[in-house]
Amino acid sequence: MPATTRVLGALTAIYGTAVIVRPSVLTRPLQLSGDVAALPRSVRLLTAAMGAGDLAIGLAMLIAPAGRPLTVAVSTRIAADVSDAVIFGAGLPTRTTKCKAVAAATAWGAASAASLLGNRTRPSLPATTGTPTIKEI
Image 1 (tube, rainbow, N blue to C red):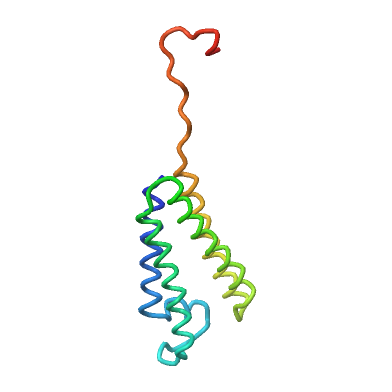
Image 2 (cartoon, rainbow, N blue to C red):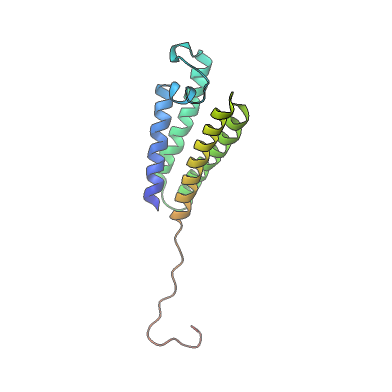
């Protein structure tokens, strides 16, 4: 259903904005930092870039017209979630943190995929008028 896709897009954009404004929204759960003030400028910069990517993808999911443009926007979100799961799963410091990050990325990717499948329209059967003809049978 397009409404579900739009809600996921809005949540993605909100999360991206939150990461830009407060990098610890991303770095703390991933155990990449403790105190925000202690984050090196380079980490803040990379985190803001990740947040900007989520913001852009979320906005695309919100405003893309139905059909191929929306499919591309959602597919981009799914690809980002898959890459998050792989990269964080391989590189985070503890097994618990890896599992949480992979679960979160997988859940978001699955929700996006489900919304994409819900956006598909089923072909309608041709309308019949009265008794079917031999061609229709």
